[in-house]
Image 1 (cartoon, rainbow, N blue to C red):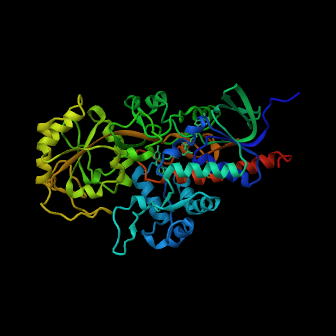
Image 2 (tube, rainbow, N blue to C red):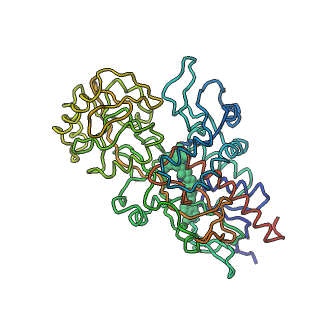
Image 3 (cartoon, helix red, strand yellow):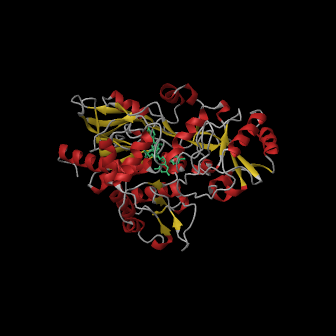
Amino acid sequence: MPSNKSPMYDVVVIGAGNAAMAAAMSAHEEGASVVILEKAPKEWRGGNTRFSGGLFRVAFDNIKQIDQVVAGRSEPDTVVMPTYTKEDFRNDVIRVTGGRTDLELVDFMIDHSLETLQWMSDLGIQVNYNTLSALTKDEKGRYRVPKGGPLRTNHDGIGLSDDWFDVVEKAGIPVLYETMALGLVKSDDGRTTGVRVRDNDGERVIECRTAVVASGGFSSSPEMRSMYLGPEWANVKVRGTRFNTGEIIRATIDAGAEAYGDWSSCHATPIDFEAPQYGDMALTDKSNRLSYPFSMMVNCEGERFIDEGEDIKILTYAKTGRAILKQTNSIGYQIFDSKVFQYLEPRYSTATPVEADTLEDLADKINERFAPVEMNKKRFLETARAFNDAIPEKVDITPDHKDGNSSKGLELEKTNWAQRLDKPPYRCYAATCGLTFTFGGVRVNTDAEVVDINGRRLEGLYATGEVLGGFFSFNYPAGTGLVRGSVYGRVAGRNAARYAKSNNPVSK
Ligand SMILES: Cc1cc2nc3c(=O)[nH]c(=O)nc-3n(C[C@H](O)[C@H](O)[C@H](O)COP(=O)(O)OP(=O)(O)OC[C@H]3O[C@@H](n4cnc5c(N)ncnc54)[C@H](O)[C@@H]3O)c2cc1C
């Protein structure tokens, strides 16, 4: 009689994003039998990874190390970029999170960032220079890549995800689609022995010797968002996948893991006010509206509400969504004049701006376009006048790094890239808050073992990626989500495979 019992695997990987794929491949390299569970149907596979910009932040001392990762996919002398040491990376994480970060976990990630990207590149992930973030070229026509984000995968997150699926397929690792992990199964003595799943045939247990939890955060659970981030997050737009709903984070905590990190904050950016409720596969991250450092941004009351020029966008964008969420109607109007149109990210081309030759007309057109949401025209014009009066008539802009061109005398200064709004036409792009991913999760050690509050490992249970807490709080340096998943995924897969073998001599 044919058996309908599923085989026993050394390693079950829960999820099919970047973190999961790194874990699966590294376990496979150790000779383990591996299966990947993907809750989403095939056309929606790949989690937030698929929606991502594919930007990777890694530490390096010499550009030749980056050239080696790129491995000839582009000519080396087409880019210039400042070196980015481990110290630089560490300082950026500490600075943007206000020090609310686990430095042991972060240091491990940073120390292994470059070698992990090299490993991915060798496996066939098409990693390239991050020319997309370059706003200008130097005198030799080379892209000036900003400090900190040297690498980006070809075709962004879609390319990254497709490459990973190709790599695991070639390795013969099965991916079970529409298979949602519901919970973890343990032996009486606490070892992980299976994962309970729901698929199109109902419920069953997939038996295993170890499991790697790589199922993303809880950004798409309105229930968990309201509970942990606060009620104002209940209806927020989500930039990525609909499938990261946090049930396995909960199951892992129920199994004994310590809930770790900042559960009350998340990564959230300014996105197109008219963006859909969840990530759109045709747009992926192209609904971002991140050129606000060159704008004056106002709310419905016609008031500015942040220092738009606090720092380069990749160090402020992840907290700016939250600032917009808090405004009336969760809207921020980004106002530009024609002097800076050239510095708007190409992503702005996915929306039609409101445009006018005077600020008065602009205000009227804004109110027509976004009705019934209304901006206070009178106050907006006063704000613009005060803004212009606080800035010298002519300043040279240096878009790539902080230029120190600050307004003087405003209650809320714009501390860099301050330019008058004085060269028509004027354009407005309306932005709202888009939730990218959550920061709270479970605790692991630097072996990617899930641990309890006493630091004891949960036998045979590993985790990586967005499910991890302890890295970020309130803000985040761009390109760190993917590298975290890759570094800890590689470690999780390797250690899970070794654990499976050492505890089961019959295993391959
Ligand atoms: C629009 C956007 C742009 C971004 N850009 C960047 C960037 O350029 N650089 C960067 O570093 N970070 C970026 N990020 C963040 C980054 O993409 C994520 O943090 C990272 O991809 C998370 O990887 P992961 O593998 O942990 O989770 P995900 O890629 O989200 O994968 C989670 C997987 O788990 C599956 N899953 C969920 N629940 C279950 C379950 N119960 N059972 C089975 N499977 C389950 C999901 O379907 C999915 O396959 C971006 C995110 C978004 C949304």
